[in-house]
Image (cartoon, rainbow over all chains, first blue to last red; front, side, top):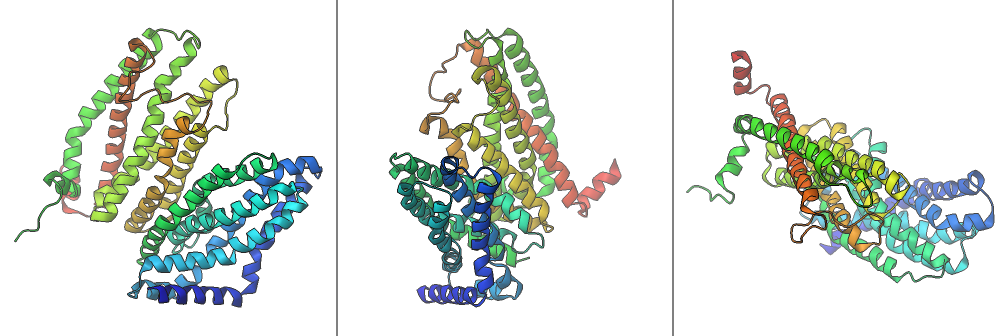
Length: 223
Length: 251
């Protein structure tokens, strides 16, 4: 079972690195949208510092959303997904491997890139560590929840906007606790409660989301 | 040997569209009359005869719409998710249709609850909207209904649409306890629950009795609206079945 998990993870990562352009797109989107705020709202440092936690989290969320479209698409189109589901390996582990590969190629780079943008948006330095930590705990949750929506809509021709409609309500709790933890950190308030709730959401989605992803994939393949 | 039945007999009988259509035609007038009677009694009693609130005056009377619709929005979501789950587990077409019938009714209830809350909030809190936990989680509920409806209409195959929306509804079920307990977990502007089954209400009897009547009326209204939509859906999907053709040609 674990062999299949590692094989699937390795395959997905390899495929992702063979298409480096696609890998960069969500990151460029993240940087560009974050750059819109100083230009569109106000470049004043004290104002941006207040805005930064929310802006960074919303941008991370949107770029995670953007990358969901491709999560299962190519495997669905060339029939790989069907073969994977037909195999005797557990579809729970398959869903888990694919989601982890997605996080490693989108969520993790976002987290690494976030401090740079935080400096550009004048986020107080004491909050940067918390920002990275919340993204590190929060983005896997985003990938897991997003993968459910991606699996539900993979068989549809017009998936794009629909994914956002389905996923955004489910992303809101993660956004609330992630952004308010960073907000608290800028004010020097404790953040452990927020981090604990983010962690709880991650654990819950790690345990339950792969079931929903696998069921949705089976539904989409049976089309 | 006959296979052992896990569920009571009526459960299996309801799975037949024909039986379900016949039984709802018997139940429908009962629920429709009850809804009409209870809601008209409740609304007149609540708006005209219930005593004024000593702080809020007459503006509190909107709770006779607000509280039932908010409770219904959550109950309907649970009904939708559970019947979706039944549809997945037992492959029961009727359960899929019930889930399909529930979504727009629930969305309108959530919308009514948010609207009446805003209308009440303006004179009482001084603003139409505050981003507190109860209001936000209720808004998420409305978005979840929209997502379910959008997903349903995007899929062409009925069986797949039912499975997909059932999975989505079950995932969204996480939100229900958050709405329910948001007033206890966070320090919100929204007051704690108006109704609890276990404790004595904080309002006098003359105030909460009409509310109870309205609540039961709303439930009966939901049952009526749901059955009407369900019966339409049964006819639409079973239009090639013999009993539907027979029924149409007879009338």
